Length: 271
Image (tube, rainbow, N blue to C red; front, side, top):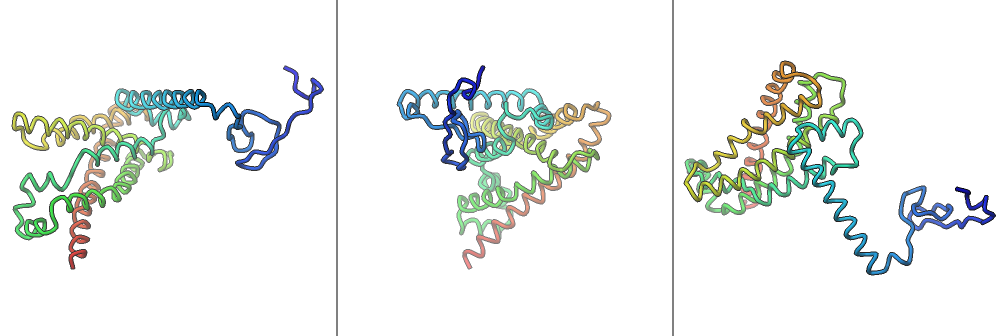
């Protein structure tokens, strides 16, 4: 099509209110990408049009992301590495949403107390009776959330160490975000199922959560590694074992630190 100049029409230049650049009027600013406002956008019908568009657009991303995450281990990581990112939710956003859901519906210190493990230590029993279980559990979860960043970084470090490839550490950080997102969602489901079975049939508390990690999560990580590495099981299996050992050690350290820091801070608060 002919431009406005070729048609003898002087183009209308306007200043973008967001970045201040003057340019020919267009739907989007060529500098910052902000959409040009139109009086029609203040109409109620246009508002609902945008609302439904955004909801369907986000839902489409959520469905595609969850489908890839749950049914095709490693596909999200591979697509991200190869530049196919717009179709999915960003890895960090996925991880933060899964973390929020995890801590909203899964408790840590309270269940450990109910299991009787902490009650075997008289000093801890007396301490928890003074600070209340709910307060201790809230503090443990707060500290654990902060320390989770070290878990993600440690997973990426272990993965890069075992892979021994030229990919940067940040690439394995993406893999860690995807894998730990899956772990949080898996734990959320098994935790609720575990509580249901414990209440209905008296099954041992926590048995499903503990079994899901070696039986479901680590095989999932193995299939993920196989997909984005393009290697066979003979290459993947020993590296997966190394990742399991390193990250399990890191998880123990993070858990001990979370309980230790929670206890110390509560003690200092009472001093």
